[in-house]
Length: 555
Image 1 (cartoon, helix red, strand yellow):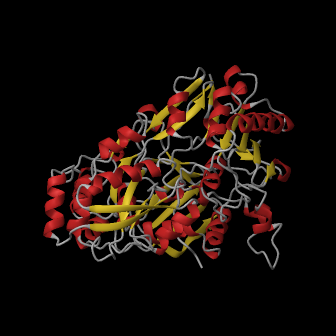
Image 2: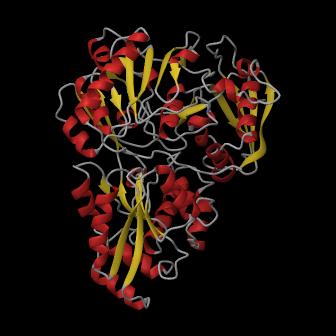
Image 3: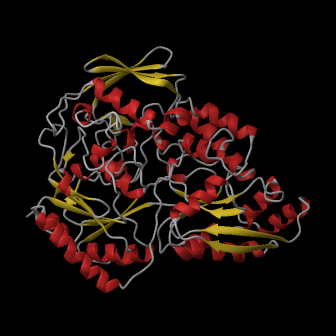
């Protein structure tokens, strides 16, 4: 049975072990791993120009390279680097190549797609493919596209099917082959995000001719082969020996790739579960990049010679989720009172070391849409008390579930601040901590909570996606019982409109609904923060926050 877990970026932080010992051990393992693959250690290679190797320290590595087997952030990080997508975000024309401004859903360009054209009713998109060749020597055809989509549907892969069925309106059998280089995408209804969803990494097009050589009656979709074969038409390739499940992966340049690429010819992913060890590897130049660092580490790395800390626009947000099925928390005035009692600025100032921003309205400020006059979050304890009284709610006790895995290690500090702030309006907050991302996600998806601190990292950054996914009553991921017919109506209108002034006005109205009758109560607008070694340029800052190492140039 398909489960629609749109986890996005989890921001997890594992338990700490002996920092210095772990960092030294990892640095030694890193040097051995890269040397064994014919390169030099990560950071030094990029900075000195002596080696076009980029070393990427992850929180962990997946046990499979199959796009159908999504294992959280590591699968996402690797999947985006493998590329092989039909479309990608067109960041080249944006300020600072997308770092200062999010690309919108109309700002796409073809990666494997050469061109596309919509029918008059918008329900058929005809796509022509570029000439592309996999590392196995097979030419890209429309049959590869058809097989890739059929596979995702047959295997009931959660996020791609949710994007096709719920975010966009793809037909049940969406891909029709016209000829070797032409295919059609069939939709039940046209929408704003029909092509933008295809930027998600699990839609990468597979070399079906290669995979089909290894299928069996028991394994008709080549799952066993794709455990350790990437089989794409993108800029990278690897041999099975280059992938050590859960530990490391080395990608080499696909010699048949004719798309734009920079100078990096080898990309090494290494599993480094401890955040302090990842920071140390970047600091010492043994890695070019480390994911998911703690904010105190980013602050320290800003002052480290040879390290560039990039802060870029992101639609990621940290919300407080209140279960609307609860007899008290389901009251709109109680929810608004809780929102009014929260001092978002003091939370950001206390927790984030100069990074991130307090949420100002129902939608992320990164979308660049001004809040409506009645669509700004306020901090007003007196009004909050009046609303609680008017709702007939006296002293109230609630349990708040938190996890250091999602939204991140700052969860406890945020929870303690919320506990103090909500006490002012007569709410006693009991904090319950769960360790793993899996457990906090299960609690959310099962709806077995009163209150929960979470992370909203959109798989495809767009106002419609952010309104629809968790806050509309017609989304499968609204697990907490919130219903607002006015917001639902606005979401449906926004979902079929292209970016522009008319759509922005409706988005502002939706944001006001989310402030005055809160679904998720947003606390923090997060930035993408990347600590990278100097020595590479030409970063493409897509709305998914990935590196796209194949575009990097030395310098």
